[in-house]
Amino acid sequence: MAIRTVRPDELTLLQDIERAAGRCFRDIGMPEIADDEPLTLDELAAYRRAGLAWVSVDAADTPGAYLIAEPVDGNLHVEQVSVHPDRARRGLGRGLLEHLAEFAERGGVPALTLTTFTEVPWNAPYYARCGFRVLDDAGLTPALREIRDREAAHGLDRWPRACMRRDL
View 1: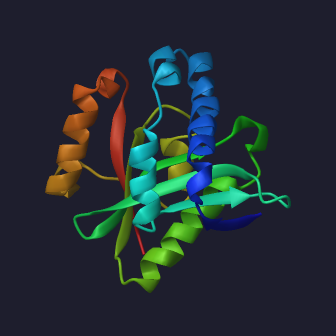
View 2: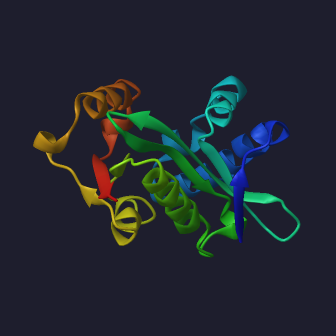
View 3: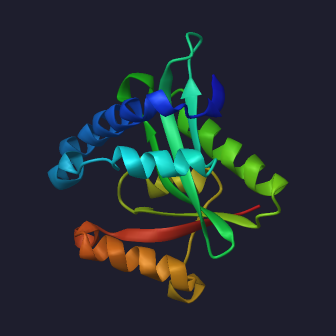
């Protein structure tokens, strides 16, 4: 497994990975999540231009997973990490998270944050195994509150969600 930055011609592939990864939600009774469209090409391109988009590639340099992040209240926030189901359970997601942690540490960033579903096995329980902890309301920064409000407006609070943090 190798990790590198996303190339401009791979943005549609990121959307394909996201759609494929999302289909797993249908199997656990969350079809709305499975049907949710990925970020637009322009949105993905903005993460790439900011230097905050990476892919995990195989020996043929074909991406099988990706991660995008953004600065949020002095930390790096994992906006999306997706692994194609054909490449699941091989450490690609964890590798991307570790890559982001190393990138953040080099830049003096104190923590990684994310929002996630608490009762989906490959979400909050997985991130806890990767060193993240659930934040209570008192631990939410202003921008994390805004992110959660946007998620609620998008209907994601139909299922239990939480903010998580990994101190570096």
